[in-house]
Amino acid sequence: MKMKTSRVDNIVQPLKHKHVPLRTCIACRQSTAKRELIRLVKFESRVEVDPGGKKPGRGVYLCAHRKCWEAGLKGNRIEFGLRTKLSAENRQALLEYGRELQEKEIRQ
Ligand SMILES: [Zn+2]
Image 1 (spheres, rainbow, N blue to C red):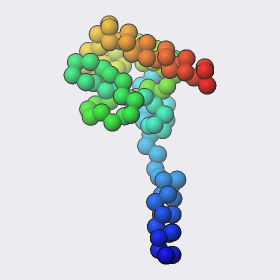
Image 2: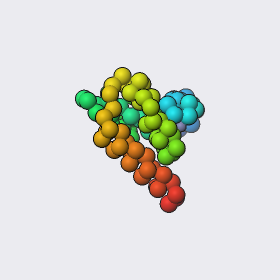
Image 3: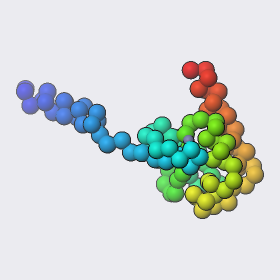
Image 4: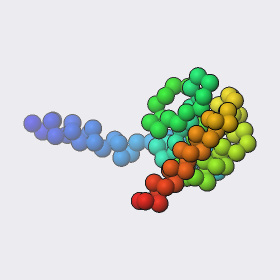
């Protein structure tokens, strides 16, 4: 019986001390916990948002802030990071996503 309780503790505890993976936002260059950043991934010929961070392939990260999305989508940072071409329509769609993020933040 004693064994059973300690086994449960062992499952819960390591999570607290687990190494937090860090990623760098391509806009502000700050290292942040991976789960607080939003991953962008190249999928076929498009750049898509990967909120779960689970899609395979090369990815870049942006903070969940409109400022970083606008800065990150300006110029060719994403294109350079993902080694792809970003169409005007694709860039616009990503900017819209960034705007929604900001609205959610304000509501909270
Ligand atoms: Zn940032």
